[in-house]
Length: 417
Image (tube, rainbow, N blue to C red; front, side, top):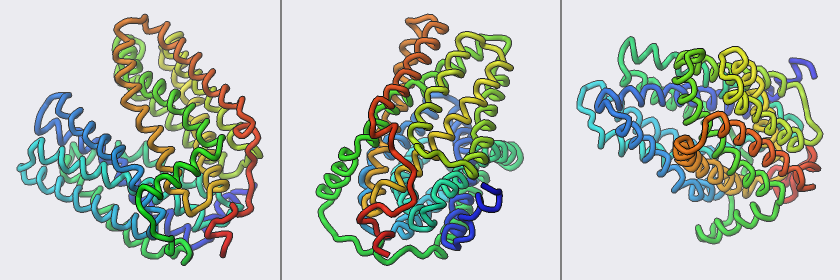
């Protein structure tokens, strides 16, 4: 596929405006964690204070994920996203004003970030449901790859820019920049026109719609098998990268804190490089390719225990980052192609719930295991389990045989059009 063809999704004005909105809002979001961390530490120089803020944010997000899925399927997803962006803008602007004026307290920032977490639970399902409505079905993979490229690139640049703002003018102004980014995103979203059918869903009770979404989720074996598998692998990944990785790096002179940052940057670079490739490639069986690639992520996990040195780790993490992207783009495309648009936000909220619940499980579990088991043994064992679970998912015919397709899922609003 030529470069021009791989960027063809941008020829649709709806997707072009949606891509602009996603890119701008992601740019702000990429700066927020760094700015927030230093803002909290400026108020209270303790790890527990930062943990309190981040913990409340995550809990609020998980608590509202399923509700966010129902709301996004019930109303116009563009309107849901604009309201969510407006609330994020207002809360981040309030936090910025409190920090800049020197009146911020830990309780205030905790409440504000809790509200932000709840709002993000509506943002993710809405965004997932918009993509198949703003791009031609034949270009879904390219569209997802472009969105992923934007997210990955800004994931590298955003924290660096936030760091410069924090050092230059203070964390409050970095949060103010995040708030302003959402204003631009709201304007861009106003130019996206979704099909009329997407805004005329039959109104039912929240419980009934959640049950319907659960029925759609469980009726597709490939879907729940992957989510269950990633419930395990995400817990391992977060435990290794979030807990064991920094611990090994700090206790290994050949790596150190700076070296560990470089290793994570190598992973991000691998993600960006593979995203460019995914704009031009198409796998006939996206989940088969994705789960084989996921098994490859075990390589950097094992290398962290076997060869904890910067060069081999950097190479392994570049490979791991590329593997993550193969699955990520294939998974998003599979959801968009095989799940009816009318229930897509609810289905994706169940998917997200399975992923986010695994994060605290992994961090707590590995914090405990690290005190009982030799680090090398724990890392190698984790890599073996990671690869085994990934490949075991392929035992399901529905996973390994799911095909890429460009026809409309039966009953989708796009098919009706």
